[in-house]
Length: 330
Image 1: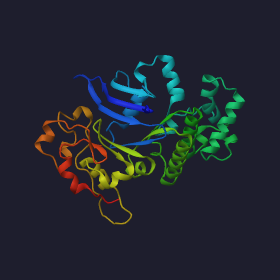
Image 2 (image 1 turned 120 degrees about the vertical axis):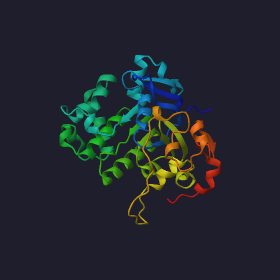
Image 3 (image 1 turned 180 degrees about the vertical axis):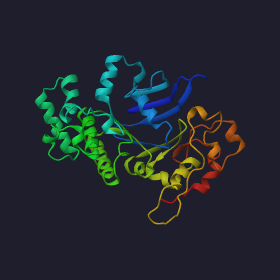
Image 4 (image 1 turned 90 degrees about the horizontal axis):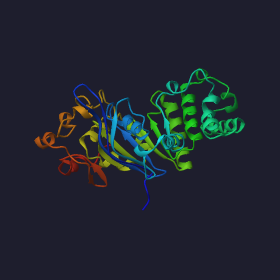
């Protein structure tokens, strides 16, 4: 039996508060195979970024994680300092939303890219620079040798995001965690950066967790998509199936709110109400207050994430609602 590259089982995260611990993640179950791309989508506050931070053990001060995180079968929570450092340096690579916030503005690009190779792996500086030049060219940066001598403020946002991707590729990780890597870029640059990331992931056989607010982007890049709401997974389905076989009312709401190039509308549909955090969710379905299909059972008992028509869905009424939701316009 093949061991998943990444496996989350019953993952919880709580942070301290005056009234007691507040849950941010509530029982996340996910798995990812080597070479697979998994999309995490949902509104702000749904727990997407907190999930990948838990995977890297980079949680807020005072936060406590429960459940299990396993990387290639190894318990991440049980790693000592040395194993954790190797895991972060070589096993997992993180691509952040805003590269300007994560690249030191006082250091040259070459120093940023080669430091981990020379300090942690003992690679000679000349060889490290040669590798950096090769990877910069691979991610589409022209004249890469000159770029090594430049400072971050001399590069555009799109080029800096390519530098961020290059820094991750230089570490040769088995897993990439991409936390909304295109949010700060314009649409044209978004397409280029995502195309580069997807191509290199496939060529190198890396797994990827791709976080985004853009459902269409997730459908284009990922083989599977997991929809999050209030710190829980509410639906998981193959990307090619999600747009026409989505079953959870929240997923259907997200799909229905997308603009269409084939139809003109004065106002886009929207999911009513406001998103809630896991600590606001109560004992029933977290989506109950925003759902047009809510019934008393939805407020009384939390639904489980259960298999349904080729995917997983967390909804008490999915079997009776599914016929109406079978086809959703692409």
